[in-house]
Amino acid sequence: MEELTGRLVVVHPELTVDPVSRQGQIGVIAMADLKSDTISVGFGGGPLGKYSTDALLVLRDKNELYQDIMTGVKEMDINTFKELLDINMKQEYSDYGHTSAALKIAIENPEVMKRSMISLEEHISRNQSIEISDDASLER
Image (cartoon, rainbow, N blue to C red):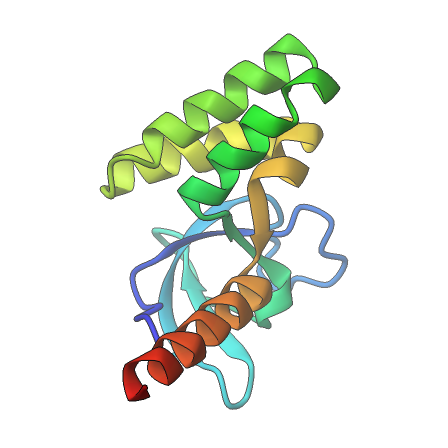
């Protein structure tokens, strides 16, 4: 399982109950306890927010996003297409600056957010299934 600590995430903008009122904001995972589904997120000041994995959003895998951009180009307007490409280009760099810029673009437009982001819960689930299939292929 990949290390989640230090990863940038967005608190889902439509989250109805958030004790630290950070809906739609970018934060950094400070601690992750997947057994209890509690992710502690810091926001550069103030208290840590505690969230379940389905309340946090991350960018989709860059290769998967690129495929979807290219195959869905006819179904989207030009601005959505440009913003998705911009996000995808920023994903080529793994530093906080580019990732943060990509997340900001994604959360400014609901259509772009829908196409470019998934819940942390889904991200973890996908990565676990990839690891399981990788382990199975190594055993052969």
